[in-house]
Figure: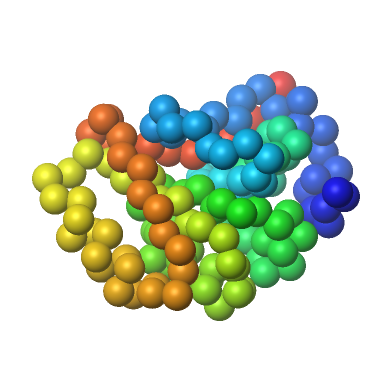
Length: 149
């Protein structure tokens, strides 16, 4: 199936030296499109959109739009609980407003009582399917796109 992608998709993703998805070791279901939302390394030439594979896309929160979301058509949106530019609550509100009908998979750092955070998010965005992944890393998982070669 051909997907309508943001204009940045004309860039050749093989030119990017690294797009790193630092996630817990869980393997996503096959044949499902995943949109990872995260930060860049903040260099001037960092990509804000990259098609990593046929089924995995990376986009920064600042360029995310309802049109791009529905053009890519993910079943799973993968994002950290908190990043430098957005948090899961802000992203969840956007997804709900955009009528996203998939799952927001939130990556959470190691914390004493993650159930409190889960309850707060579920209460704030009750109509959105939420799933949670946990990292053994104290600073938590991240989604980062690097600079071109």
